[in-house]
Length: 215
Ligand code: CTP
Image 1 (cartoon, helix red, strand yellow):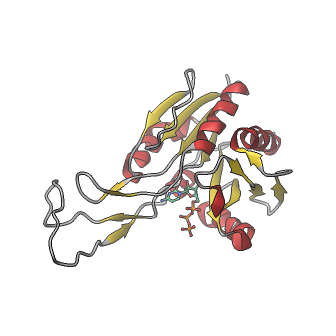
Image 2: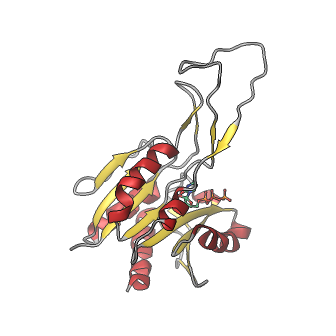
């Protein structure tokens, strides 16, 4: 049976009202590139893709779309158990607006009054996936960090979220065609990519490194 890979990519959009949202600049490029590289490597590949303009990879990659953190949580609960390797490159919101009491599903109207948005924390999806993992599953995160604290912060995310590995990448990576990434492993080893790479090339490189920790 081929290795089954599940990848998440793109931002989440957390609704403020029927037409507005809180989001981020994630383009989904890294996760889409990973899905292409996994397909090329012969893996059975499922991509959970957020609201991005980039086209999803062609079949046989199975692509399912999400908009919010809650949508992605539902998809992960359906798909995560079957995967051998889970790579979560999505930039999931850490906070979402609490529904505005005055709104009841419509569009918030302009007024002369100041308005405050109350935000509530979202669930940590990768931590949930890691806490319900079955034996043999490998779970890899992506940590977008200021460059000076990138490795230390990624190591603490691996411990806090229970990951096997995590790609540390600097803030400039978001919405860029290139990535200057370092693979950090659970045992503390760090493997820096040989140079700044196109995301398509980095996907092939990082899969090769992950293959060596899976065997
Ligand atoms: N992640 C997740 N669910 C969230 C937030 C993040 O699953 N609600 C995942 C991302 O997909 C990524 C990893 O956690 O693989 C690290 O994301 P990051 O935003 O760097 O970490 P945070 O937990 O949000 O930590 P911080 O805000 O301190 O950077």
